[in-house]
Image (cartoon, rainbow, N blue to C red; front, side, top):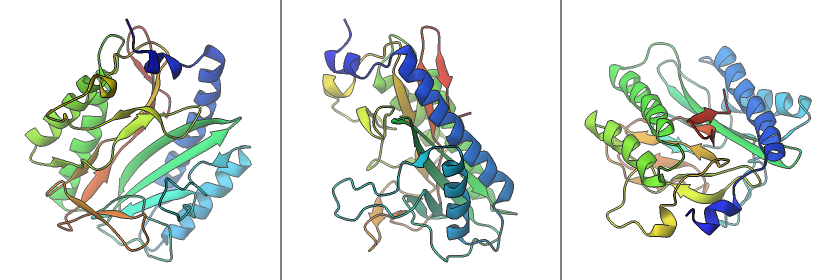
Length: 262
């Protein structure tokens, strides 16, 4: 029998359609970023482009003003993280350079329901290490999504991601995880991208139809350890080696997982 707590976050058909609408905007923003991002732009320019688009869709940026308890509300629409930055990079006057890899994370809220997604972009010619890091991170996301089926558990997603990433010589960031999403930006359950030595039943629920989950591997080229900058938001690889991040919001259905941010 399914865990009571997991049943509480199962969405109705009406809710799923609203989440689907927010997720479509997320996907459209990331496509727009992909079509426009280039060396010489500032990360602030990307942020304004995304915010204008989201507002034009009758939605709002989901990240702006969020405070997870650090006392500093997030100030921007996008999280833009460059090279060794893992996630939560705050847009600024920083200029994007040839050879950078740039991770863009965006959340949208429309009609009180959320979508969340992220993608890492290569700027011009990048190193072989960065290219492989991006490919492995994105593939690990899809391998995790394949395990998001009725009857499997969170651990099945985590293991698929970790096994693939580590078999390719990279490391999974352990301080940050995926999560349920839909009625709120962050919902139960958490979705680690690695398997802990001890997993409590409450952290490893069985997946049921109607769950909406944000699966998001964050992968470092070097060690998995991270630090946080003085801005209290920007997470970066402690060894300063590159990091990549890909994310989709998905719906668990009877037969498979449906990707909503596509």
